[in-house]
Length: 129
Image (cartoon, rainbow, N blue to C red; front, side):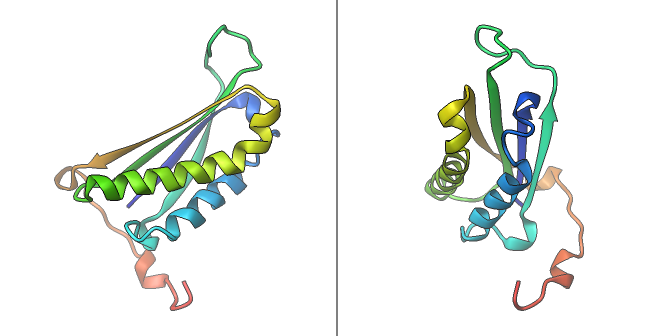
């Protein structure tokens, strides 16, 4: 864990390189000690049906939801989300300079007792990873 899920308005397709945004978030998360590298998952989902502000189709959004296992101190989580949000703001600054875009993020704890996990990623990480 953590899982980073980006939802973005479909009108940003072709304006924002969402694959590169996913990679920027992954790279930033990998530098934050509280996020185990083997658990980092970043994905983006295009949203085609939405309504924003005054209803003008020019408005867009990028919303990041971060889910992680419970147990981290509030200050650790606040620092982590601030660093990830800053990465998003820096990445999206060129698009936001010319387009109407709402940017948001939220971090939520996952109850470990209600979230079973299984995987082999750690078995396949190399020392260089």
